[in-house]
Image (cartoon, rainbow, N blue to C red; front, side):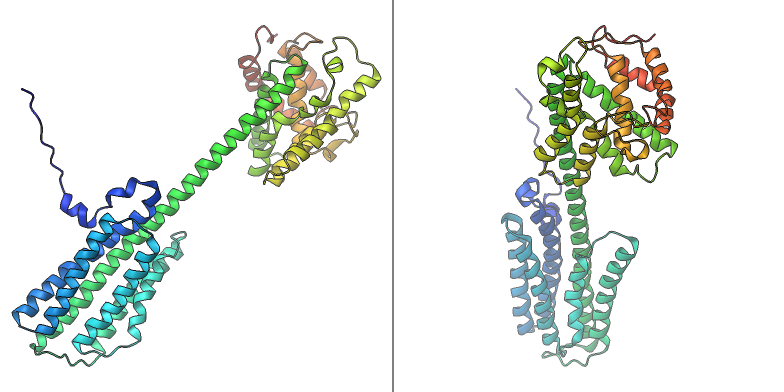
Length: 436
């Protein structure tokens, strides 16, 4: 025989009234469930309160109040069940709850014999304070103060600044105690309800922000993979395996972060500029797609005409980025991507192309890309040349300081020589890189 263990669900009664509804894991109704859980708790307190009233007024044999509280018990019990098992929108629930509380208080006070007053405006004020964002200590303090003071003001004004003449006969101390218990209990329920609503709304805000961040990160990763794949296809045309794109991107990232660490060009290298420079690196040679294979793959020396055609890949690269990525919302990214593609063959001393501009007239993102691109072109094997030992490449980089390359950028690049060497080695094609 097999022993069957009987599973007992603990706390089911409590969960039924004050827990999160069973469909809370349903994405379509998660926000609704976050509201109905506090509502279930709120109506449960009201159910207990009116059940007590019903017993009390039955004891004193006051028929009008018995009828009122019997309707209240039925109303709240029905609502608890409806909220538990019916899905719907949070807005009707909120409006119904505000309306119910407002009208119920007026009706109750009328039966106690009190006159309506401006204190009833405190009720919607409490509920409106719930929707104030939790961001900022001052805002949170103001929200809590509004909720607390509204409740205290309502109870104080209602109990101590009203003459009342109830339509039934009770000892004055019983009547006074009943009024206080009614107000305090009602607002205790309201305070707890408001607190749970605040928590639910703040939690949903946090979850939404997290979800947006995660989706943005996923989209960015997909975008980067597409860009790198596209760039790899283009690079493969000149005999590269595609690792040129990955290596140069790694060099650019390492170099840019080193400049930030050293505090260089701090007026330019904010978080957005750094991010966009790194993201743009794979697109630096996208204009090569316009260069004929006969020129791109030529193993011998290029003619002047052929070299001019090669030079045009920078201008064409900018055009391709401008036209193919025009719908991208990030204008900053587009501008930097175009600058990287257009100016990454310009030199600090003005000897580069396509325009021969010099110094800081060359955008910083392009000056960073230039040294990364030249380093990889020298250290990697191409169809027209063998790979140069990395130690010799660094010697050339030093000799180009203030000539081909920005001196500040060159110093930062040389400062991370071990890191650059590691990237070149780890991402090298087979038999491609020689350390010395």
